[in-house]
Length: 206
Picture: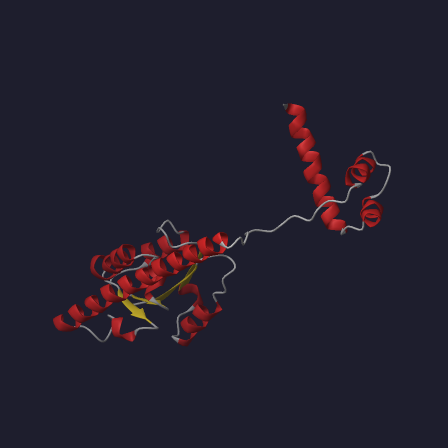
């Protein structure tokens, strides 16, 4: 029997440290920890698929919370059933021991209660995400009605920008000197020059 851990973070900006610490506290060996850094909207995840192939009957899969298995009610239940029933692997949920199948619910009543709690929690998790998205959409719509505009607003270009852009493009002045003369940030001037050049190239192709 082997203990495995699975970690998922939704984006590369998310920090997985909390999940790693939880795995270490549960004595999961580093070589048995699999981690994906992407959305859980589907299960075409490299490390998750490797883990599923590795699991065998009698093993234990440790996860921090049930939403690590998926992002919606249907997928969480599908993966739970596949792992526990089809493969015969127990699941240990660190944040919700009531769901653990490896020691608490071996009798028929216990299994029924565990499955029922899982369905309720998965439904609540999905409903909560839907409410969050709805509130975000309503908030954005209300802000727009009040005249609030979203997105970064580009800095207005100085009147002499094109003149200095041409001088830079023809090699008559350095980038830093041109930016200083226009009282622009060096990186901003360079970025706007690249945008101008691309615009001119597109126009020449028309």
